[in-house]
Amino acid sequence: MNRLTARFRTLPLRARLSMLVAAAVAFAVAAVSVTCWFIVQGQLYNQVDNDLQKVSGMRGPQLGDIADALKNCQHTTQGTVTGFRNSYSQAIKADGTVCVSQNSAGTIKVTQADKDVIKEASSNKGLLRNGVDNKGNAVRVLTLPAPFIVTDTNTGTSSRTALMVAVPLKGTQSTLNELALVLLLVSGIGVLGAGAAGLAVARAGLRPVDKLTEAVEHVARTEDLSVRIPVEDESDDEIARLSRSFNSMNSSLASSRELQQQLIADAGHELRTPLTSLRTNIELLTRSEETGRPIPLADRKALLASVKAQMTELASLIGDLQELSRSEGQRGERVQVVALQDTVEAALRRARLRGPELTITADVQPWFVRAEPSALERAIVNILDNAVKFSPEGGKIDVALDRGVLTVRDHGPGIAEDELPHVFDRFWRSPSARALPGSGLGLSIVARTVQQAGGDVTLARADGGGTVATVRLPGAPTAPPEVP
Image 1: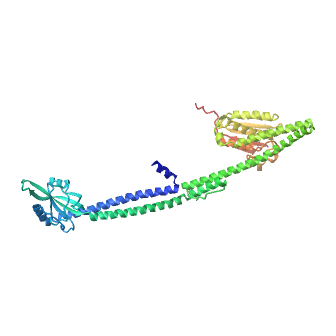
Image 2 (image 1 turned 90 degrees about the vertical axis):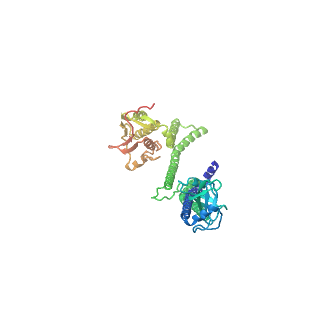
Image 3 (image 1 turned 30 degrees about the horizontal axis):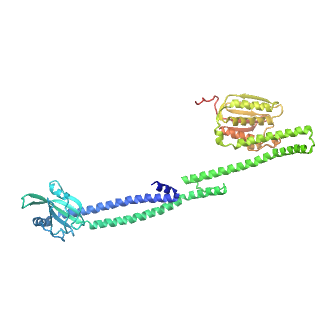
């Protein structure tokens, strides 16, 4: 059985569906055929029983023959009884002795049940059963108590008798056999037709799956993510949902690949400038050493400072790229309850070190959020770094945190209205800021981190000049209780 199950599972889905449909139809046809056969059998036997009742009800003309048969116990065959051809008529004594009517077609074999009819004559209304004659032919037998008392001349004892009437079942059995053959043929044709219909239905039903399979194989073979499976708008079955899911997945993969390619291209472009500058400076230092022509001390210090700045910019760019490349699962494992006010205070300390000439005011109220601590601190540091970078010397930066809303306002030149939609794009830099250090990834990291924490971030021009950055994060003013 296990082998058959395993073999069945290895068959193609189309073949399995066809076999299941054929099996279901075969079971239904078999049940209907068997039921039909038994119903017809019951009807035919009822008809035979009615014939026997008619024979027994017309006993008047034959009672004399039965009396003579009992008297002489003679055996005469090949006759008819009351107009029924090849019918049987005989009387039996209590000891099972058969006395055949002169008009009987043959002798009916007596059973114990027939003898019991005589013993229970007062309460027995008769017995209907299947039996055989003396030649082995099947007959339907009706045994009734007879109004005759037989006296044994030797012993002087008297006993009752019974009348046995029978008709042959050859015609009935022939009809049933023909019906069984017809039902068998019809069932076989029905099963074959069901198998063919099941195969056709399976092919039609699995055609979308075939298209989906071909599309998946095409994508796996060619990596062409532009493939789409046509789906009817009003269709909402499982196949349509699967096709829509595949199309959505392909679209997401294509978009992800485009972003990946764009990220690689932008990263390559951004890396090219510091690497070129590094190579030029290092080549100058190397050539000076090889030729023995020392570079003036001031120029050497400037070259080394440039190399250090370029290395710092490269390290920052690589860190930003690593942050953007981390998966959602890696971030989800590090999410915890964070005191946002402490994160803001830590970022403020770093901002004051980077802009010692600036005046930074802060009004920070307690607020607790669920986020990744390091990523959240990096995002806030990026916002403050932008404010420090674009603030004029001796300028002022206002920082406030109230009920989950963090605002950072500088008094710099501000951002042009047409540039605001692009500030969170990767590697995008304002034309006025391209001369300043940076990779153009800071604000895109801010947007991604804040969105992952369930919040939102906006950048806008401030009244009176400058830029105001607003970060909204869901949370609570008090820390949730720790789970033991």
